Length: 204
Image 1 (cartoon, rainbow, N blue to C red):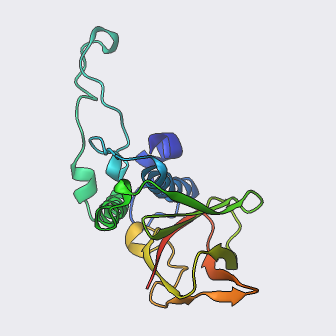
Image 2 (image 1 turned 30 degrees about the vertical axis):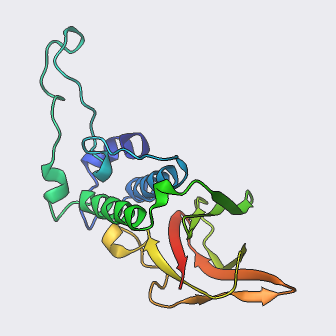
């Protein structure tokens, strides 16, 4: 998280602060963690604070830091402070892990690439019956983004990084279901895909 947001984490993590560096960093932090877990293989590891974007490293006392204890700690209080944004990252991580467990995501060996759009920086793939959508573009929010899926039916959103409880901007309708359209024997799904947002859908 510190590599994404740098020193701004010390000054702009208040809940009502609208710093652009923090907004970018938090959006990418969520996306990077989800795509790593979804494509990374058979295991996923959180490590002492990275689940909520802890701003500092761990450095135990040693000769090179003059035997300092300054960074030999984790500030767990950050995630418990309701006035700070760390809780948003932690909440996203909690739901991301819960979804992976319920879908047995890491036990699923097969991953199907559904869309690789280098113009719009969009990646879409399917694993364990879940469809993962990532829009890494810094500006382009895409209305009615259309992509192929394997079968007809309807899809619902199970995880949306743009939800307010995750520090997002609430640009995607989580309540509605998204119907598949069949054209010339192929099945397509259309959805609003905001910039720097990831979604997880499932057929219902």
